[in-house]
Image 1 (tube, rainbow, N blue to C red):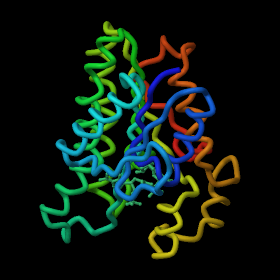
Image 2 (spheres, helix red, strand yellow):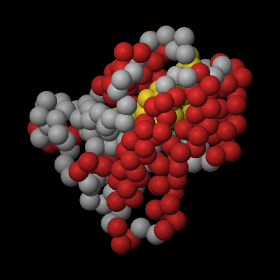
Image 3 (cartoon, protein in one colour):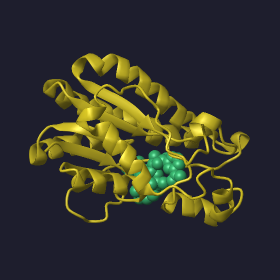
Image 4 (cartoon, helix red, strand yellow):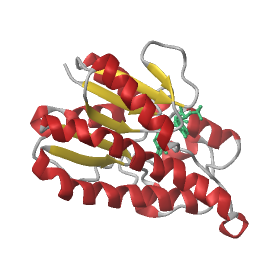
Length: 234
Ligand code: NAP
């Protein structure tokens, strides 16, 4: 049994990942802005390094060294580029990219000590294709893909694999919010028509990919960007 931290694990994709890792026999601590009150959920803003460090220290004390980290917390912003003020741009980068930075820095010492670790970063298919009105978010997620590759090279010798899963069109509260605000460029049904496998993704689809990348048998897979998107971005 290993100890995992899943950020953004109170909702949508992160929640499904936490459930899947529990089913696979791991102890799972969830970090989220608004925890649902379940056991082992910690209130943490991943963009705040002090909160992240304190939460990791608590998990280490309660559950032991953290050798699995899934960075799922994410913040979207839909805005025409010329209307984004720099503070808002920075906030989106602080959560989506800075959050990964802080959590990886906090988790690495345990993984290096163990000579084994698994890091999976949930980026976004929009980083592959670009996305109008989402330049800040897409920039952060593209940087997460780059960070993933660099960390894979740096920490492979320590027995740590680092991969990214960029979801595309997964039915979660985030996607439903975008649909209700008219930001999807059509309804979810319209998008299903345009998706090669003719359905929306499920959070469990992303969780299955993460579970594989975390498994022992995926030890030779690192620095990869494993798209889970129904064929929308090939
Ligand atoms: P979601 O249901 O909104 O879940 C995201 C979770 O992250 C929420 O619980 C949210 O808390 C939490 N969070 C946001 N900012 C945080 C912060 N600063 N510190 C800690 N937690 C924070 O969205 P989702 O669709 O499952 O998205 C999960 C991940 O997949 C995100 O990284 C997202 O960018 C990525 N993604 C999703 C899709 C998709 O189709 N759904 C596509 C591409 C990428 P609150 O709700 O309390 O704010």
